[in-house]
Image (cartoon, rainbow, N blue to C red):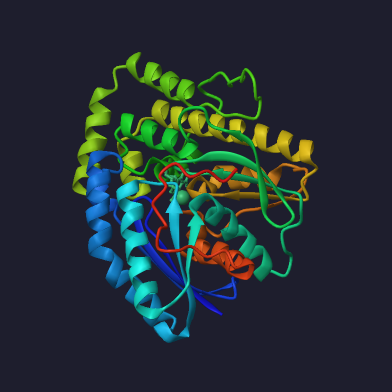
Length: 359
Ligand code: KG4
Ligand code: ZN
């Protein structure tokens, strides 16, 4: 049973063919990094235009690579939200048109549920499926959420960010220091060269729900650190490097980054990891989680992965392979399989839902 899945919620146009919810026959991702990089973040209007340019070839490539014809498909799945409304609309409109032309059922998928199912799918592939109740930490440029997952994939929200998402904090700090966009991968690569204990940031204590996150204070603390130092010259040099070369190598960044700034990056990353791990561990204990799922772009972070590997965590902790951590359509196809089995189909009124929640 093959599902063609389409994802266009942010700045990646992606399509995949997934068989029986577990076998990824193809997964194509067209990144828009070169479009948005120079602006230091995603420009929604440009994102929609890029999606329109990419959607047809990306879907065609996903079908070709998996040797799938439209007649081999059982359904078409598409991300309905959350995300940028103009971006979502491109994927949704194209999916609807294909379904209408081919008489195929349409499935709307929540992007956050997709991130969770990237891990669920890989756990099934490995023969050791996710056990319930499970805890999911979805941590990306748009989301920082903790969910309890009950049998049958029912979700309960345990905590979420009250301001910036963790990935957004990485992106904003990187931009401030001249490291371009996206910030997470660069900071992750440079952090091992700095001393993570050099700059002491205060950890946030949340009033009300202690499982909520907040990263805006940390971002402001980094801003204050920068303002208190005379480092504009190095920032300008790095900006110039990023303008010249879209993805500078680690050595190129290192040549323009003094030790004090490397120490700041390492300390910032360590603080984000500490904030994530603390709440993840306490929620896992609270719900007696049998499996912990970490997913979303920030789940690529090597510092986070190695901290999770070294710590005695309360349950088996699963990260997706990096290609399935950041936005992709295979995860949408995996989540759609469950909906297909349940007969949860959408009709042509399916709309883009920018603020769609999971629980
Ligand atoms: O899941 P994703 O592709 O898109 C959203 O749904 O937001 O996540 C993108 C985010 C960006 O903020 C990026 O900086 C962050 O994930 N990211 C990382 C790493 N790789 C990507 N953050 C920290 N460390 C990384 N290695
Ligand atoms: Zn995402």
